[in-house]
Image (cartoon, rainbow, N blue to C red; front, side):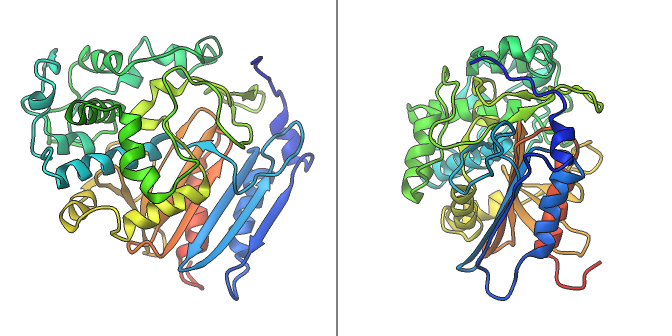
Length: 390
């Protein structure tokens, strides 16, 4: 597909052209005006193409949008639209590994060396010192393969347009990770690294003898009826089913940055760390089941939600602690939200809620510039903080 360059699309949206606002309030006695205000300002003030929020509180639901799913047609965002979920994929990966532990197929105390003998060696890397728990809670010290000097120019600059359909295989991710010295000794610090979840995906395949995609389907999406959630194939470039468009400035900043339609891409480079596709409704079903203790036995549930500090790491989520593919965020009102989220070209996703999974918020922005994490925090505070909170 030919890339569409949408120069000036931000200004058009901010001016009110091609902006649509839609809310479907069905939560009794609550019109979610504060949340809708955040959605509206995301388009009018922050200049992002479109945003949606799906809220569940017990059995009651609310769905609101602002902006456009497609800036050329002005079509609004819809409940059934699929989008790339970025690092929310990590929660699925961790859940699969914890299910394998519950079955006695592996232990989080296993070393990487046990499952991938000889693969994590060289440049100071030592797979005998890294446990599966270190992978899942981001304390392994492994260098992030997505920060390798051969990867950054291809995927995180405008040169992405020339490489958007390239395929990257898990073995290449592993090699890129160990081509660099570790950031720190395993278990001594915290740093976000996609290498950890690439290795987790490889180990899932080694343990089960089946593909990572099949294990996600067998253990999560099919049992929960998540019909719109999937791991794309290694050569797959188009989103399946109904979807809007996803827009990126390709890390070029400033008011004159070109906005590119990057909906069609090969996301194999993100794989088990960030390559999945879903919908707001499917993410609601998944995270509510996970937070509510309906996916994992109590022992693995405790493991997943045992957190470590992210302080001083430079991770952009404020007041956060990281578990096993999930994180907590303490809001300004003192409420702590739990869940996951992430970004990939043209799409930012946040899926958070109360610890029991009864009150949950899923938000997606179909643009990747500005401050989406700040926007997500505002949505969460508008919804989860008690009335009258500062």
